[in-house]
Length: 119
Image (cartoon, rainbow, N blue to C red; front, side):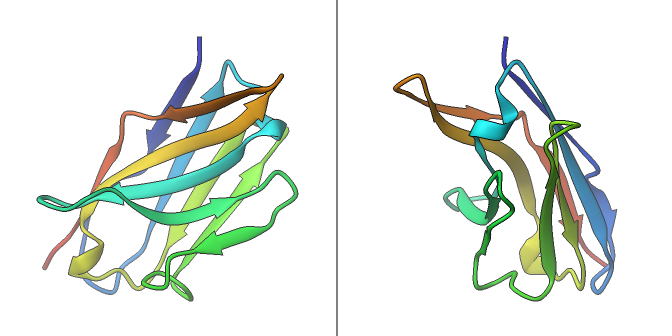
């Protein structure tokens, strides 16, 4: 059974930092591109950042220079360090695993963790 479990969300003041973590189980972690997405109220889910098994990263323009994604293949974990947070970063953040294994495309999601940036 595939599980992606996020943690680390919460309430933070503008300019503050949070670190999100995602622990994966039930997948061949090294074969998956791992990512973070977010969905704000009334908006569509959007890409935040992705990272390949080799460590290549991709960021949304809105978070470049503020957020850093990293992964530990041995621990089957991916993290998102978020700095200089602003109110526009308020959203539910979702961990994602996307990969093609044995000829089959797979796309898995965590349950989400709430990040609220407010004074």
